[in-house]
Image (cartoon, rainbow, N blue to C red; front, side, top):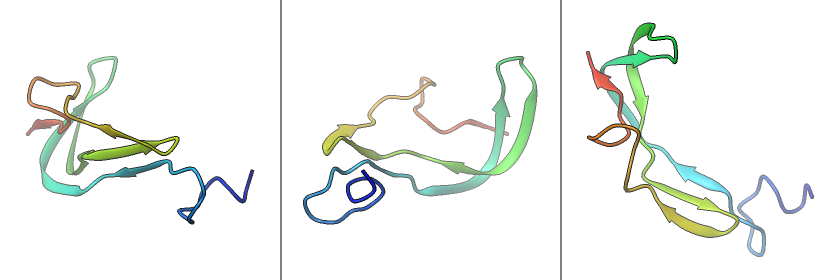
Length: 70
């Protein structure tokens, strides 16, 4: 499958995510409630899976995908 996966060549199946880097002061919380501060977040805006486009118009938070602001 190496001719089909991991490439964006014409005629292959597209699996790709567009993730702009967002700079800021962010707080990341893990499943145990432990917080970690960071200055970089990825915000998904578009995904193609199996060649089909999927909008990412939702997120794990009421405000979308970005983590909490620190």
